[in-house]
Length: 269
Image 1 (tube, rainbow, N blue to C red):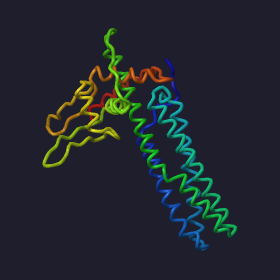
Image 2 (image 1 turned 60 degrees about the vertical axis):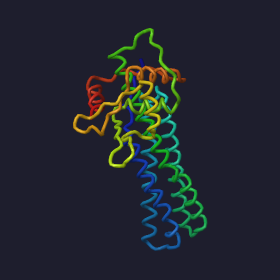
Image 3 (image 1 turned 90 degrees about the vertical axis):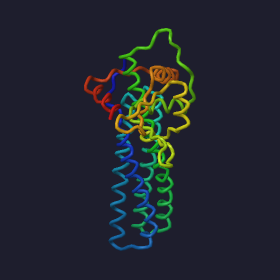
Image 4 (image 1 turned 30 degrees about the vertical axis):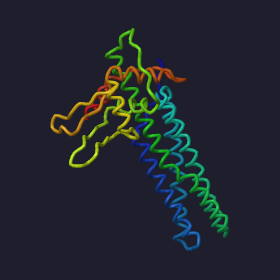
C-alpha cells in the first residue's frame, strides 16, 4: 500500500485561501480608481497589493503541492481537487505577475499599460471563488471515501455482494455524506426541507439514494426535525466500487489510530 508525505488538505484551508484571493481581486478592481493618482498613498497601496498577491501565489502553490503529495492522489475526488488547486495556483501566479507589471508600468508613467495589466489580473483572479469552493467540496468527498474505506476494513462486505450502479451526482453525494457531517432538516413552519453541511448535494439526490437504501436517516434525539445522514453498508460498497472503477484509483494506507478516532468523532459531531 502507498504511503504519503502529507495528510489530506483541510477543505477549510482552501476556503480561507479562496477568500483571501477574492479580497485581492476586489482590491485589484479598485486599482482603476488608483491609476488616476500618482500620490504616495496610491503607490503604497499598489506595493502592498503586489506583496499580498505574491504571498498568496506562494501559498496556493504550497497547498497544491501538499495535496498532490497526500492520499488525494488515490481517489477520483482527490485527483479533481489536485487539478482545481493547480488551476488556483496558476491563476494566483498570473494575477501576481500582472499586478507587479501594473506597478512597474505605473512607476514609468504608463497608465494605459498599467490598466491593461490590471484587467488581465482581474480576468485571472475573478473565477477563483468558484474554483476554491469546488476544490474544497472535492476534498470533502475525498475524506468521505477515506472514511468509507475505514468502515469497510472494520465491517467487510460479503464476497458475493455486487454493488449497484449510480450516476456521478449520486456518487458525489455518497462521498460527501460519507464524510459524516450532512444534516437534513425536515419541513417545518412553512419552511422547505434543507440540507446542511452538504456542499452541492441536492435533496432530490438524497431522496433517490434513500429510496435505494444506500443511505439512512437518523433523527436527532432532542430535535426530531433534524436527521443525520449516513451511508448504509450497501452505500459504502457502491461508493468504493465507483472509486476503484476509475483510472488511477488505489487503496490508501489506513490512518493511525488517533486519526481514525478523530474521523469517527467527526462523523458524530
